[in-house]
Amino acid sequence: MDEAGRRMKDDLLGAVPALRAFAMSLSGNPDRADDLVQETLLKAWGNRNSFTPGTNVSAWLFTILRNVFYSEHRKRRREVEDADGQMAARLATHPAQDGHMDLADFNTALQKLLPDQREALILIGGSGMSYEEAAQICGCAVGTIKSRVNRARNRLAELLSVNTVGDFGPDSRWRPALSQYTRAGADER
Image (cartoon, rainbow, N blue to C red; front, side):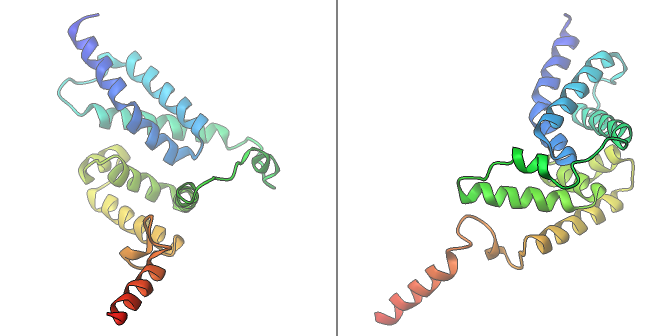
């Protein structure tokens, strides 16, 4: 393998965590996300000669993953769903800690977003891409991406009942009790 091939291999392997996170946001299923990442890596490696050196490898990979997802989505439209949720209910496990519940609530809310809003939010907020890079991946204007991210953030806040910064985080459910305790302690002094 030549130097360019080794560099491409390193770039592909380095992008796996971000690709998996993006795939999870699109599919909502860890197994399907892994399949999407694998298919993306295979397509990227097979078409590595079409990649223009010096351009953004991450954007190229995210575009491939997005195209793979939507291609599969079109194919799967005819599949029968688990409409009553009986199969999913048998597979679900309840989280043991509050953090797991918060994450589950967030994931549920994230999946309720419109697909284009979820995609934009994950690219910007989750993957740390610029608005310009996200716009290029999604094939739309930068203003459209900004609008989608803003709408996604507002909808998430609504779904998660977040009104202020104090409404989320690990201490949010204990903050009211703690503030009463600290006020009571100050009154006694």
